Length: 357
Ligand SMILES: *Cc1c(COP(=O)(O)O)cnc(C)c1O
Image (tube, rainbow, N blue to C red):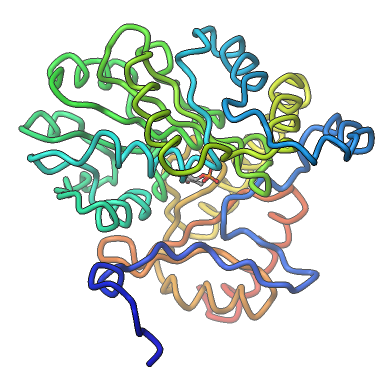
């Protein structure tokens, strides 16, 4: 009875599983790569002074003010920007618009797990390209026939990056299909491919305000690319939901982008804490993959990832485990505040003492 009226395609869909958001108070939440610091305090002023009478109206369907701000910030034209309700939505529209081709699209076998969900949703054939033994992405392996290419840079959940020159090389060789670079974590220390979108018509960059700008709760993502690509995304958007961003999200996002000083300060805190945590974990016999993100991907030389995760959980610390071949003995640990990471390290030290390793 429960699945009455469900379509065949729906029955076969395996949806994305987000990291859990338990309603427990003194939890140290290092499982969803949220920013441990609040967004720009200027957003607080904005909300205090917001006239609720505006809410009677529909929001600007184009998010024009925010587009202007983003265009200015990234030194591109307004018609190079597409804004959506979280980058997940932007990604979904991009898959719909560009990836339903004869040839399969290419993506790393270890990457953001939403990509394969969109492939199932939109009936897109995909081919997983194995990452290297050291978990890096080798873009030379993508120089084969394809209906499109997508990868995250830095990659998730591994944290490593590919260089801009490697991306440019791929864009040149792969001129007949679109390459999407998902830059959800780029602000934490990788090189952005935004400049390449101005030079190559097959490059689309997607970013989000959820991680580096601490606005996951507002759902704001955007794509940067040439006018042709942006028009395609607009066409999908306007066939689905004309008003993806509400008025408050548009205004708060603009304020967040404009407050660059606050942004740089909180980035620096996270990067410093990442460097500190990496050292501490290495000293506890963890192997820590190089990271240009706000998380570390680690495995322990003696203890199983699942055991460590369970112990942390029993002590109110959440980290993320992916039950997937190649990475099922790894944990992804988001960078919290310095204090939270100290608590994590204390807890791990206790576990190591208990397990005698
Ligand atoms: C978090 C994340 C996203 C989604 O971001 P939202 O804007 O919150 O939807 C997209 N891609 C990757 C690789 C991510 O880690």
